[in-house]
Image (cartoon, rainbow, N blue to C red):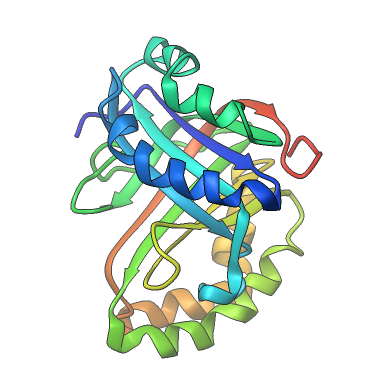
Length: 231
């Protein structure tokens, strides 16, 4: 796939009484968003705190929509689309992060949604990362045992602005979105913290993933709030 000019991640918060409406939107918008003009790739995602990447993490009050767009004009037109209008009609809060791909490695559903595998020079401003993996069912128990120390350590790293778990399903498909003050802050977690280093070293040995992706982005704009705060 060509590298998209812009990627948007929307996180919608709903009240407990409107969770059924959110579930309905997750079902009916899946095809609609994919077919919007300029949408190269789209995923509607559940969220969680990413502590164990099991059903226990699931957060029914927050739902995410990730779209890779051909152009900024396409992303702007998305604001007037039927799915966005519908979410605005009942959601209590919205966060939108606009991103430009810097580097990407791996695949998602057999595609390279943020451009082909490549590296990029360091970027001095705020950055974000998206990780996504599909677990091999036989390897899931050992992966779940390895995750909690990494998740606990993540939220102690200076420079982390926010982090949420995202996935297409409660089990077997897991990922993260994290927003950082700088590339150095992100690398401090990814390469210098012992808990994450140990999991990285174990990944090829354990063969946890049937498919995996890691992508890094330049943060273009943060709109709205997440749980009442601007991340």
